[in-house]
Length: 475
Image 1 (cartoon, rainbow, N blue to C red):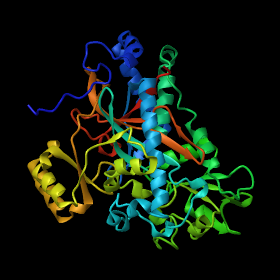
Image 2 (cartoon, rainbow, N blue to C red; image 1 turned 90 degrees about the vertical axis):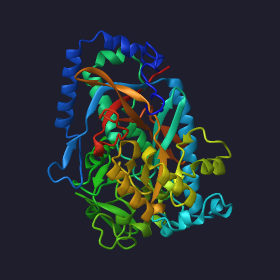
Image 3 (cartoon, rainbow, N blue to C red; image 1 turned 90 degrees about the horizontal axis):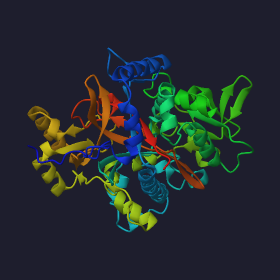
Image 4 (cartoon, one colour; image 1 turned 180 degrees about the vertical axis):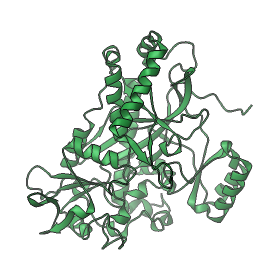
């Protein structure tokens, strides 16, 4: 007996029948032969492999590319549930953009004592080169991914904010395309809001944030580190579906005070660059001099207002998990409102009292690196061995400021199709938010990641997780 509450089952809610969002789907599912569903699951895997929907795994010499498992049982939200989430996400994204503008300008939140100065000043994600720089349209985070977890019928928590270069949207789109191809009859029975127009919505949002000096329709390009990057499939996918050029740093140069890309007709100026290259590699004249991925001089052009970079350099500080722990204060400071979506309770291990608590309860908590991502560098206390706990205790004691800790929430479950039938697995949700100077646009749904291992709470693809199609109903 662990004493933990049972996780919320999104399909049944713990009752005997399906919850309202799942009723039509369950009626369809109950009439389907299980053998047909298994065949369709195998077809989906073949489709993903043929399309090349893989991700690279760094440090894995035997298999540098893996297929992300796809489960054919969708995760379904009602229109009412989504509307509440959308209000909370929009509020949070507005606050993040206001926070980024403030810390690179007047720093009112620091002057007011609502955020420790050291948390910004000593943060490697804070870029002094951005102080006083105003991005075109005032937008810092043009694309945001907000990771959500659910613990009850009406209880969602924000797990983390992805304000740098949130990935995974191509899987959201391909998941929907796959479901439409395999089960067209299902979409005539269940009214699901579309997500397929995301690439065009992304392009419109990026165009709206073009520099003021842009002479006509903005020229948009996607900057990729190259073929060997773990998200290269997504970079190419989005460029193709937006009708934008996919470029590498070697394709770009400064020409007549603009950033221009090499074409068959010579160099053509770019107005908006959706960059999937990290800050450190963006400009070797400003950041890492050994970088071959960026463009020498691009920061000078950016600071002069000659190009829009999406997302803006320096947004990574809003990804920081120590900053995350202050997000309720940040939301209230910039919006004057109480947060609609709550944070997961968080202990900042750099604080002595918090560290003492975490060390005393290590086997009960999830501990994460402040700058970590992808499920790496974290400890899931309840699933860790004594040896793993002892090793992590040493790391935590040696560098406590590098970690935060959170309780192990009873994450909601959604059924997945297994050989034995349906089985519950834990999930999270990453909705994608597009920010333009005059609007915030949410695609109805997002990427549901699922921990395919029984009992696992780690949903990251790099750690064995899979994905699902996410349905938002038109009710």
